[in-house]
Image (cartoon, rainbow, N blue to C red):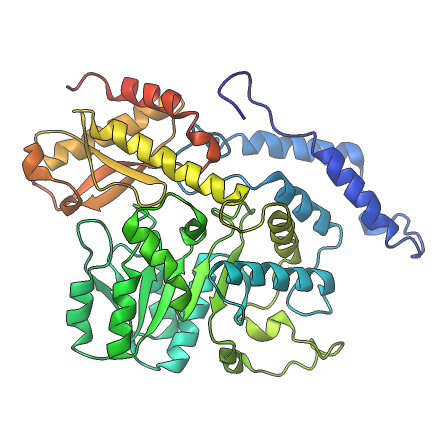
Length: 458
């Protein structure tokens, strides 16, 4: 996709899918033919329904396009789309080998590849529906090992951790953040002195700002207090492969393999369709916590079924096939094509942040640690800045640029230096997630629209 010419969806790759389907079909050539029945459908009727669906789907933001830079929505790689579609002719269920023999093997291979990215050869892990389910499972294991003890996460961590605490019956507390949006290690140390903490969640890329919690400091505190460390790397997990992280983030990712559990979402930076999350445990012996009997499901193999190490039962084998295919094409290795795309995303975020910081109309927070940029609109007071941000958001969308809004603590900004009156504790900010590799080459276009949307406020 380039900045020139008319936009078109990739349809040429459908020829690749056709060839793969022919190969798959040949593998079942010995089966007797099936005629009529429920599998047969009227082609004209299906076309009518699909055309109607296409019309309905047009009522969306263009998530696939570089001018969509708002939320964490990244188009899946073509090979992931095609592999997922290919698997749908089988429709495997990765709960048990009976329902997904080949796709279960592919899942194990793909998950092992993700674990190796974190430096783990021995591990326990599997795919799941997304980061929420993956975090639920990690905290369920934590609760089994430290029953009744409190789970803590930063005030900028994803809200799912508090909800999960309620579901699991585990006490949950927030720890204050520093001015960079990271968990405040000093505040954590003071809370640990009070006792009762079983698990500390280290967010490796917060949803709002992409901030990376100080994992080395958290690990040092674990040595003294003996809690579990869960790394919620749902968004940022792949960035350990990037070659342009700044010192604190790089130091955190270099230590991520020392966490007890890790969550990562391949359906974010892993180029996968929704939903594809992954949970990993450093100690494989936690599999004993999952032990159960199911005589009606596990009967055809003595091998480990993925459903025996998962809270979820039925899970789409197609997700595993898509992830496996993507990782075969784009291995998770430093210096490779996949890693280069992550570096490009952060470079684009740094470039946008630099332009914003040099523009008197805007007020930037800290430099992006990953590929998320947040900024406020300069005004006499915080309430006015918040109202202006909403107006620019609407005007940018009208001009074809889709950003996001985020409500952030005013402490993230130098209000005194900018002579902005603090009449609110939070400020409505503009937020951009530059997670597409093309965002760098589209930055001039993005800036031109933002510039016009903001108008002359200097």
